[in-house]
Image (tube, rainbow, N blue to C red; front, top):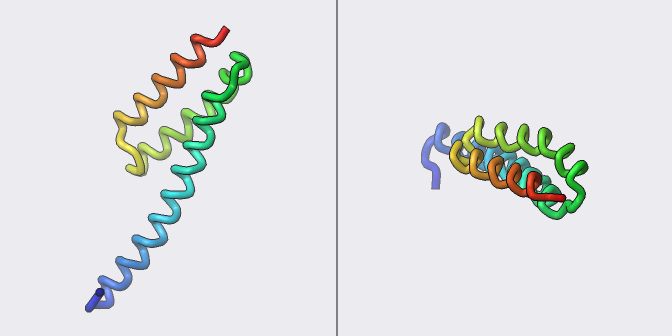
Length: 84
């Protein structure tokens, strides 16, 4: 329970930022799943730059850790390279 105006404001900010972060994290996860569910190499390769951009933006605003972003990008690249 907030006892100061500044604490109440901080709670409001945290709620707004949490909803914002959840939206972009979920959108990125859906994009990653779309790439992983694609069996066409050309289509998957075309999606990669957009998904990489989304992952980099999440890492930049500290929604995910930089190392997790790198691991996701590496895994996606390996998956697309293995497609025939």
